[in-house]
Length: 353
Image 1: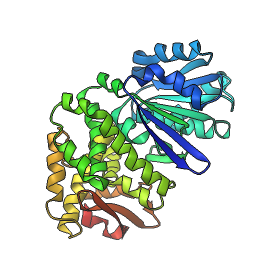
Image 2: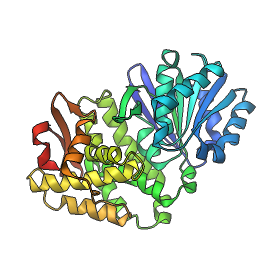
Image 3: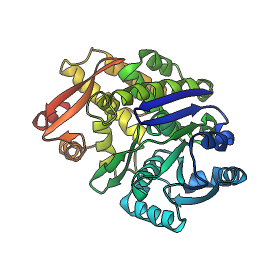
């Protein structure tokens, strides 16, 4: 088992990574979380795979558990779904002495985490991420949110899970597209902080090779995120670097109504696009964009921006929460493994489009 502790003064998260972890989930939960009742928030797909086993395990250890099941996909990360979750928490008589388990990918983690942060002004929650994207990124760090019609993650808070249990064996049920979704974020971590990770990902040319190394990839990505979050929990400085590729990525997701491209796919396009532009403008070492293109191409991830007009891209970006008082903080690379924050006025955005 690999273990990481994220420490933020009075708040901490314990992260445990082990193949087969789901079978040991209740043992680990009882070490860190008090309470004899749990609400498990999940989606229909994950529920069909793991629903009965987790509930039965909790019940066998004296923890009453009931499910709140939402539809899969980004559309569930909405205020309407959140209201339904609140109503079910009330009907289950969940109190501040109980806890919530998020069993699912990034959408479930964000939705359940935001519900946990606001219901009764906060109840403890546990993350059991089932997608690669959630296992390497969104399950730790405390960012929880729902979307509005106007944009992604516009209503949210910082609220950390007490415990994150990562079982790489859960990834075996995912098709290649969902694996690529997570690998896009893994490439991001290599780009901003770890050239060794980046180079290893360039050589992952088969699913078998990837899964033989998956625990190491997850661990290295989470170590980078842990160190970044501990240095800047509230996203005012260093943590912004985790948004490399996200300014354009979120614009792509929003323009296509979160239906055509996954988060990792959109971020991958955003990383390549902004690096190509930053090379042209002299910010970035020449050849860096080509390395990103090669890495994404080797992993079978699309890197070319979709058909969108410059005005459509600009409008989507200006609705993003990274637009602060008329300025944007763009995350750019000096070269692979070294990134920096470039604050630009909105009026200069067209240079990067």
